Amino acid sequence: MEEVRYRNGLILAWIRVCLRTLTLVVWLLSLPRLPPHEQALNRPIPWANALHLAIGCGVLIALRRRRAVHAALALAAAVDILVVMFAGWICEPGDTGSAGFLTGVMLLMLLLSGLTLPRARVAALCAIGTAWQLYLGWRLELRADWVAAMFLVTGASAVAITWASSRMMDLAARRAMGDYTGQLVRAHRDALASANREIAAHRDRVLAAQAEAETLSKLVVHDLRNPLAALHQFVTLARERLGDAEAAPPPGELAAAREDLELALEEGRRLAAMIGDLLLIARLESTALRPSFKPVPVRPLLDAVASGIRRPSAEQEVTVTVAAAEGLVGSLDMELVRRLLENLAANALRFVGRGGRIELAAEASEHLLVLAVRNTGPPIASELRPGLFQKYAGGSVRTAYNLGLGLYLCRLVAEAHGGTMDLGDARGFAVSFEARLPLEH
Image 1: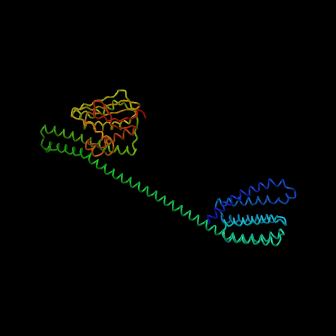
Image 2: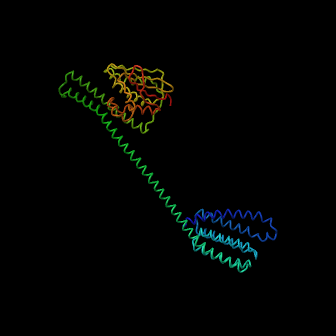
Image 3: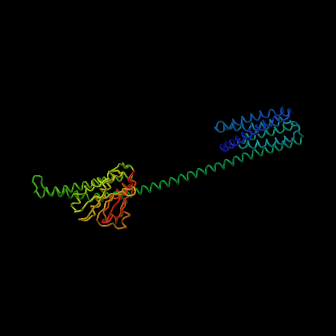
């Protein structure tokens, strides 16, 4: 209820200031055109308008700042009534037209006061207004029937205004409370729906993360188990060949034990590389690792990767070649690209048959640097190609090619460079993995 009265009072304060300003301007412009006797009669009116305007501005400022709201509303209503009473006081006797007009204005002021004041204060103002009507009739020397009519009209209207204003305020307050309650209900409903959606989204993300963690753990167990088993096997064989530490082993057994230990060391390197790939994948996925681009000569990089697989390729009688121009330079993160090429080369060596060929190639094509690792191993079926570079390759792909996370790491490295990773076609080779990277960054 108080908020409704405050808002009504604020609206009326703006209207009061605007109308009184307009009235004051009109009076000031029209006053010089009046005859001298009328100027003397109407000279107090601009001062009264100016005083009313000043009070109206003060009321508006108080309401805008929410200071002494009840006092400001009561003052505004009282001053409006006093202005009407002042207008009747300066009227000339026998002016029935002014009496009727001022009676209507008085009723309007009483009605407006009912929008901003409690019932008791409205009733008091209505009583003052009714008494003023009697005085106005006597002041203007009106006939008794006119005075009686003015008194009856004002009195009846005052009673109606007192009741109607209270009723209107009650209805307005109920409507405002209903609207406010409805807004609160809708706001809480929307907030609850939004919270439920967020909870559902978080739940889905948690479930997806849990499923991803389970899948990753299975892959890690599957991929790390093989080098760990081989490492254990070679160390066990070496211990059996060496026998008791007090007895010198035969020269042949010593040489075999050294070979077993060398193979165990190779499996250890392979295991460390796989763990390094897991850490690198995590950093690339979280964008915690950003490539450091520098001009890198491509041919020496390919030669270094090829040298890393010379020994195992010689044991399998596999020919490893490098095809790249000497002056070719790319804007690359050398460590990341080297890991990409090493993964592709190790993958090719795993599937190429004895006596096969592996080629590491590079060429520039339309502002792109194409790095390729090709081999003469078995071709990859077309239905299996879409899953080759996924993080969790399908069962058929893993079964056929024993793929871990190496190719997924290659894809992440290519994408970190703003490029792509895919299978290509090369004459004389069954499989050609190609990374297409921008030449410049």
